[in-house]
Length: 238
Ligand SMILES: Nc1ncnc2c1ncn2[C@@H]1O[C@H](COP(=O)(O)OP(=O)(O)OP(=O)(O)O)[C@@H](O)[C@H]1O
Image (tube, rainbow, N blue to C red):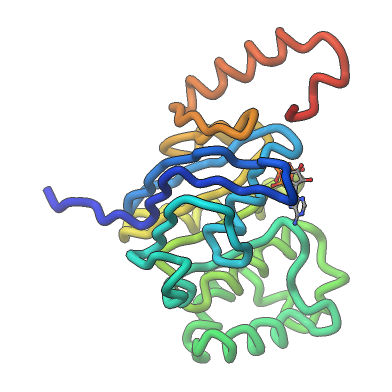
């Protein structure tokens, strides 16, 4: 059997904001064909980690390799990733097609790529809609469409299917299957434990540390956590 390529390798990652440690000695790998879900309570560091992997935030110490690049020294991995951030990141003043056109030009993608993503995420009926008029599910379909215009090898997704309609969720998840089967990798932050089943592994972030679990183990841990909560303040990460 062909050996799976290592898409992400993280060793001893530390992230501090001012003097506060948010991630403390995190290590994990992602192989091609794998989907890793990053799970944690509010403020546990999911977004901080995803932004480091996408190269949009610096980190305090440790080693991070993405698509074979030491990301502190070599930024070329950015051409091979697709990012969907938790905060809306599309151009609000442009319509759907204008967003696709503009982002395609930034990513050196061409008309066939635009056609491909419109088809995959069923955006044809929305092309002239202003982005700020889209319902959440269609907005996320467009966000993912923009992220995959450059046919990335690694997708970094932050809460991409949170609070969206079931059909959009289906379209997004269905699109990930052939992507993974062809050797892509997905890292996805999520906060609804029900979504664990969609990932090969769940990276549980708590108290600045990471634990890699199966989806079943993550659900069990969630049930134990719920049972241990006694007062509302316990919902905070620290
Ligand atoms: N740029 C920043 N400057 C200072 N503190 C930050 C910064 N980014 C994140 N933090 C802090 O780091 C911690 C982790 O935040 P992060 O947004 O990564 O958590 P999260 O798990 O994604 O939370 P949520 O589920 O609410 O999105 C929080 O305490 C947050 O306030």
